[in-house]
Length: 227
Image 1 (cartoon, rainbow, N blue to C red):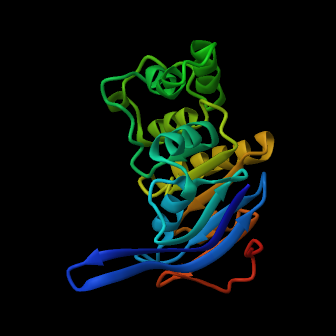
Image 2 (image 1 turned 45 degrees about the vertical axis):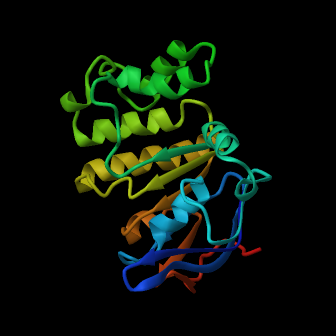
């Protein structure tokens, strides 16, 4: 489902080239859950951004569901992301001027999906917010906003769900509820889940973990297979 082959990421800084992620190979099979852990600056979010196609690798290949996204143009890449990948961010990134229901509708309207309104209502119910669909983000708690963000990420039935510190802006109890929702989506809908987290307890719930340090994978005993 997800395959990285000697993928690296180097950027230019004031002091010259800075390698954020050294050549890395990994594979995540369909329906598996993988947690990416490591200290700040270890390359976790960079790795997730490369998987999502939000960043371009300096070297190597990224293959999503059989498609090498490093060889396609920007328009095709955007279409692949819309079809295959749902992304949940730490700070929700909901559109403030739209209600929860309307935020979930957006990705479906972009692709002119039939039955979008019925699906948005069903997703609100699935994340436990059937009665909150008419509320704006400012009227929702952090946990409620994150659940809306998860529903939005699932709107177009992507086979891959990526989450970048999904509990980082939430209290412990609310964070646990959000993680329970993500893991349930992974198990019940067989969606491949890759999440970035600092929380070792959260990471332990995943099928596999990838520990990063200084832009390199370090042994931790529960890694998925490499290519």
